[in-house]
Amino acid sequence: MKRPMLLTMLLLFAVILLIPNIYATTTNQQTTVISTNTTNNEFNIENFRDTADNQGTTTSSKWGVVSTATNNQDLNLYSTNVISSTTSNKSQKTENIQYATAAAGDDTYSNVQNNWFTNKNITEAAGRVKYYIETNHRLPKNVTIGTKQVTMPQFLQLLTTSLIQINKGKNNNITLKTVDAPLNSAENIKTGSVNKTEYLTMASKIQSYIKSNSRAPNYASSLKGNVGFPSMIYLYSRILSYYDDNNVLPKSASLIPWTSISNQSSGNESAENTNSFTIAQIGAAAGVVKSFVEENKRLPNFVIVNGKQLTMPQFLQLVNTGILQIYNKNSTKIVVKDTGTAANPTEDLESGIIYKSEYIDLAKRIQNYLNSNGKSPNYASSTLGKIRYESLIYLESRILNFYAQNSALPRYAALNPWKTSDDTSNYSQYLQATNNCPSNSPTIINLANSITSGKTTAYDKAVAIFNWVNDNTTYSYYYNTVKGALGTLSSGSANCVDTTHLLIALTRAAGIPAKYEHGICTFSDGEFGHVWAQVYANGIWYYADAISPRNTFGVINNWDTSNWTLIGIYAELPF
Image (cartoon, rainbow, N blue to C red; front, side, top):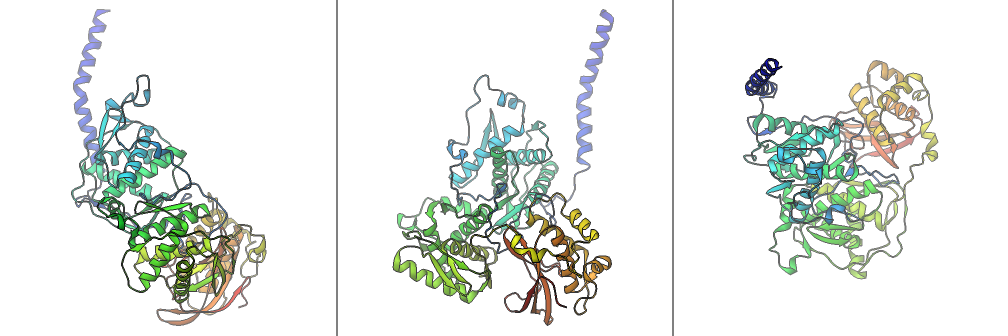
């Protein structure tokens, strides 16, 4: 028995001696697969059209209108510009970012002294970092997880690794690594949202960069611009904090320039200035209100602008004044006033658009009413009918949000009644098959089912169909109907009429109402007769013009939408 034991001990000793070499070899093998395009402390995310099952919905239309559906998986909380009708359980926690060590007998942090953490350790810490940022308007120096003090560059590595694991349904232990701070963080983003696919892609690229450089990147490229290092920490802390609360990743997450967050904490403003706000601050809050309404189908109870909680009547006064000052090229701060709520909002409104001249006139009349009565109006008259109080806030929030993103007021704004039903029974004529739009064709039905597989909402299905038609057809110039939907599908090339036939056939086959719109439109090379679709999804009629890659679902860019002549709207095209 002694000789075998001696041999066993010698064998174990030899293995121990070999471990450093094995580790070194493994490390070198891993680094060979890392991209070498990392010398500038930056990385890029390619522009892509996302058709993933869980894509967000906030980027597809500038002028979505309220419906009654509810989506609880969208995350749109910006710094302290947060709207909430309930108190987050995160806000009950201490403002000190460092928690005490876990009590004896609590195994939550039983292994953190060994420099690894579970997803739960990291998502819980993410909630504390999120709350710290929203309270102090800056990053903490570190966050304590168990007994370990983790720097913010290290925490970014933990956040992105945990996020990727959670998305894959894994719960492997995550090792804490040495990660240096970025050399020169830079940011240039517009307020908006990134959908789930994009924030996961961005996390993967951040993770790869850190592995290659042992340093956090200066910025991460996104469809909203370059996201700086502090914004990365805040973005992924919010995402994982949401997961910690809801056990599901959000469909989308909002982005807002870090300067808008950090500027809220100067602490040097005099008392007389605490009730005045810049147009940029109001514009940032307008984006939050817009997102909240589109996700929750109601107004928030309040909005926080530059750290100050305001009622919605007060916000109407601010956003309305902001629009008028932008129009008049006046950039002075706007003082918030005590404003009463509308006593009995009423509405008698037809869907349509109002142009800039009308919404400016509307803002002037609202301002006069506010100044004269000290309260919000029940409604405001327009060429489309009476616009109720809630619709006014939503309308003007969208206008100011557009300005915040584009540095220009929009040429027009869409309006739909505040309460719009998702019931499509009233639109049965827009679901019928026709000769050129055979939505009952097995070929069309099978293709529609394939394109929309995994999609759960009418909106997601409509976006997927639009993207497929846009990607799989090219434009050919000729007049009127020649090929119909099936001919267009077969040839892969068509004019605007036949392209719209295919688009509408597929959407109707998916159970989504769609109609034809015909007008005289101004393109870059002249004025032409043109046909496109309107598609009804989640209580909203969206423009869908699939003849140009410049267009997206709900947004037309290839012709002048502010100057065109409507000829007709049809369930079946007469030519």
